[in-house]
Length: 381
Image (cartoon, rainbow, N blue to C red):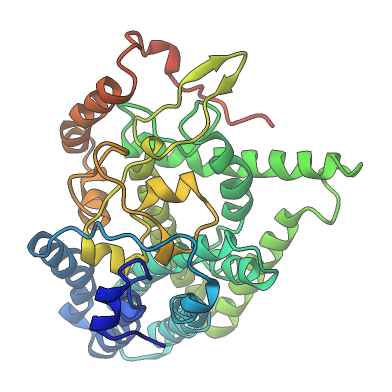
């Protein structure tokens, strides 16, 4: 049950109302309308996610309010519900758009455009919701996350993210931590193969502790591959080889969105090396934080990433906003930062001075950062 404004003012430590986080679902009717009308209406999705949300971010003040992180789960039902209703919605969106792209009245270019904007939804919303779901301790929510990830052919993200990224973030052993001065054009192809290798090795190490070989059927990598193949087969049934091609378009766009977000979240940040391959514990200042209000509504507080890595099991409405004394701050929300990431010289011009300021603030004693250059090989578990 939602509280009134007076009740919120009396008890500001309760989570913000769930309704604003349902803003994410607005992409579904917008894409459906754009697909039906075709033409320049397809550009409305980009104008909405990049233009309108960014304008509102710049107009409205930052959201630095924090809920009490010990709030009981019973108060979060409608917050959790938004992540539960999206998986079936995404299934309808992807295969509905695919069917319309193959059998509807759109031109070839419009069909591709429709799957591109569908990929924006499956990447910016679907993978984001999957990220929230795979961190939960129930049995069924992580499987819902897998469902979303395999719909974009990226199921191994679950294993890599949980077993590798959170353990080794901001160290040379994490493939997903973007290195200082590393452009996205170099980061993206590197992480595509390194994540698969590190996920396989991590799951193999888990099986080895149970006395089983890495290729054992219990390795979830097989499950991810089977689910992805099932979606490709369904795409073929819906639209033959053209259907598979269009399905892959949305998957590629979604993966680019995910990895652009990964690139932004830890760019240039490194944990202190303690010697003998050990690093300090993860702290809020090892991730970039953003308190931009509307993009955090749209992305269910993903931009409060500093607190997420500090306390990975917190539900999104309980993530804490961190200020400059605790975590480095992004100058813009993720929509703008994603665009900047596609232009490495501009991205470095914006972010490198902030990385250097972060080093002076949190590690003033470290003068030579060359020892913190990341290894080029994927992590060994």
